[in-house]
Length: 100
Image 1 (cartoon, rainbow, N blue to C red):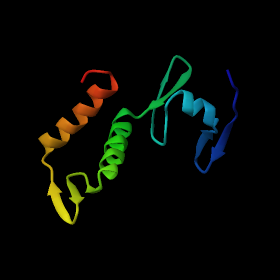
Image 2: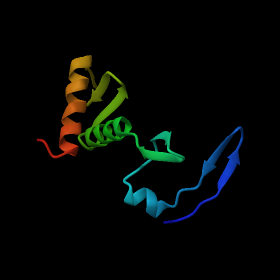
Image 3: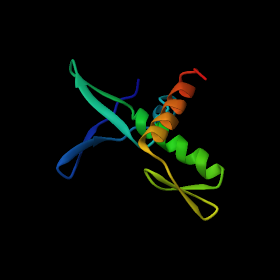
Image 4: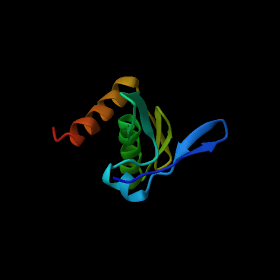
């Protein structure tokens, strides 16, 4: 267990989290915060993590994400409807928990 000090940041407060703790918890840039029983719980934002992985995988294929519904591949723009985006997100969620 490591201890940390709460510091004032503008009108808010923050805690510096050591890199090794973030790595062990598999947390990158976006988190979800909740308070319960005198504790502050910090966990990875699963939706952001999935969207980040999708974008990394697509970049590896040469695809650029222009916005939520539009991709670019070799100069062609590809529009995705909400159902296709949902299917893509579900694929990554299932892959994460080992259901392929």
